Image (cartoon, rainbow over all chains, first blue to last red):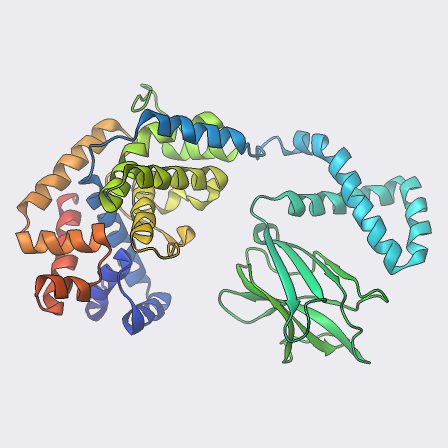
Length: 253
Length: 182
């Protein structure tokens, strides 16, 4: 393997977590571009694991095992395989709760929707669609790995508030906002997912209703995007490919 | 019982897969396999049994909460847990926020430490390598690894040049690697 010798010693220190300042920045930049040095970093971590073995001897007290198993029992996780059966258990109560939230929201947003919702429940095909949406929303709301991000106004009193629930692996995002001022004429708000690396990703447009409420459900975003920050900007009604400054609201987990 | 392993022990990957499905007994299995490594490295760093137990609990609970963090195609579980425990213990020692992004910890190491015999043999070999190192080299390596000291901090403490410290640390790690190659 060919590694870059000028980085070799710093790479060992980086693996140990003791490299700081400019040297660390330089190594991290180099690692982004150099597979050989990334491989060498993995090797150094392997060497570190070996060094851990030199400490072998003392075993944890037996109560530590019980403490762990008690904690595990207190946090039962949903099994991945029997998902269908689990949904069968979850859906009646959670779906009802989420549907209730949605009904209230849409009721406030548009009075017509209330009557539409009554007819929706009588049409099985449409009900199935709603149920599917509810499944996704429930999955996001109940996911243990969901990010919960609260966005607040950047420069004004904290009445306007937005909340993002985001599960990167499913590319599932729910955004709820309240007390949002009306957008200027021909403008709309746009939510942005700002990833750890790369350009901001559009995550849906919205206009608040008369009460200042707004919602975005599962906008088309690529799956697996690690989000660093969420932000909101004012954009032309049709939306923008890149955010227009200034940022109106911003939030980090 | 801690340390007990069935004759037909499941592979780490199989146990982690079971944990993904919510199998609590899988956690007991992995605890019996690797709690010794995790606890002893945390104890060596922190010199505090209570704090070491906290690291032990934290590392295994992270695995339980998110077993997807460990990717068996990217390394063996035992070494992965050992490095995470060491890094978390160093973060605790230096009273800093956890700097270790677990998803980024990819490890390449031999041997697989899943069996008690493999762990004992590897432990013995590591101690032999460390015992064969020059005192200055071993000291620099241990100060970096178990105390989390930077090369400049080690240079200040030992009075050795910075470059010497860097070289000793790197070569010390390479000596360990070489002992397990081939």
